[in-house]
Image (cartoon, rainbow, N blue to C red; front, side):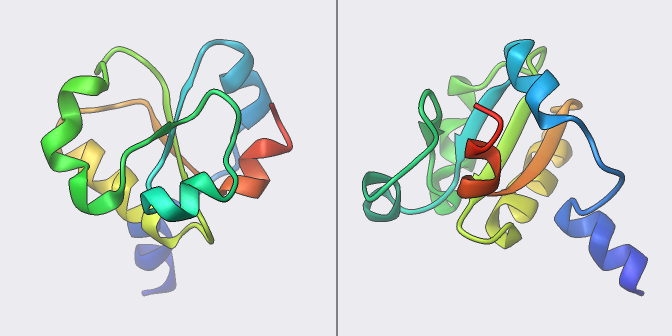
Length: 103
């Protein structure tokens, strides 16, 4: 069951976030606009999780996408939602502060 939860929320094998970012990955911060305005990864785009489904046109399926939030939980849900919509190269970066270390 633990492995199923890890997979659902995107906590799987480690990936090199720095390499993905250097190669042009799009960073999507799924926190609220207020949370985002209090600090975020430079160059990231803010699409709150509850608005992700209606903003898919902003994301290209052929690009690598890294999701992030405050702790990694909402970004894990976002990763799962994007995967369900046909986005194949999606990674849960965890907290925005974690992703920020690689920028």
